[in-house]
Image 1 (tube, rainbow, N blue to C red):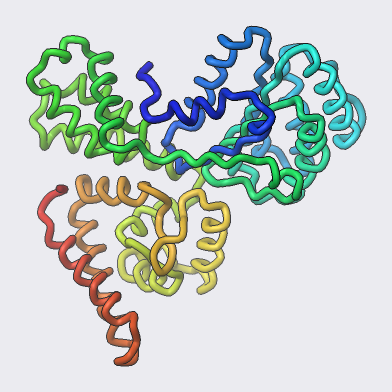
Image 2: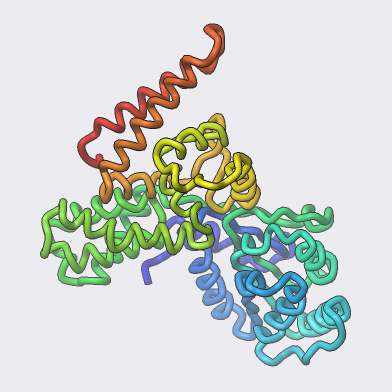
Length: 390
């Protein structure tokens, strides 16, 4: 497996089982490699502490259960992950949680224990569940001060209890900078096809992959494997279309937009054209580019769903004067549309240009936003005239 480019400082923190690192919350946009990073943390800690007990909890499994069963499901997952070191719990969830805390306290006197909780965004909206988790499990364990915890997700956990907010250490993960991305791609290409290590085209391959993935480690690796396999079979234009069709488009739908329901998955593709938007701008835009997605839906539909996506911050984030797609999600999605459906992309840019020009004309002459709207209109006009992806 390629080495962990630009993640050594994060790994050093995550593997440091000191009191100051009793609870760490790592977060990033999808595709940055949080789960892979946690797997490496487990591997290193087991080398350093052979007797350590590492318990994995994937909150997507909890999300799949009815709300009334989520607490019981979490307790069951923790016990199963404890490799037979915890006896079965009995009673209702609060009683069982108390037993869990007591048993963990005894276990921690014999060996180190780390609880890894992944995909925290899956149940972020279930406030009752989080309050229960904090009050009955996490806070008591933190007070004991012997069990270490790492929570990982797309967004920071919104902790409710003061004693938790006082000790949690936040650790955001960013996309890889170009130099680290190139190192990762080069290593993956050579690992996939050792003969390419001496190829005169290796630098060109590395540049092609790096430009396509915007620093997302998982996407860099996926594209590098395909490029190593297909480079000799296609010209650059054919390879670009092949990569976007077979790798990037499925990655967007299955990884970035995996938990988004229709028609919002289609709406997000259109939204990627816009650098930023509010509910009114998005409503105008969709009415012109894809009116069928709004047909039969109330006017408040856009506001309600933007609010939900903004609250969870799974794919929507504050951007400029409004909202935008989170991190590099928008850039990857926009580039994918440019390559695979350039006519639709140009049409979307032309509509965006017209909307921002209209917004500028609707404002009073002394409004400061006029120049801003006209500047955005010019940017969309320039994009609509581009002949190819740069």
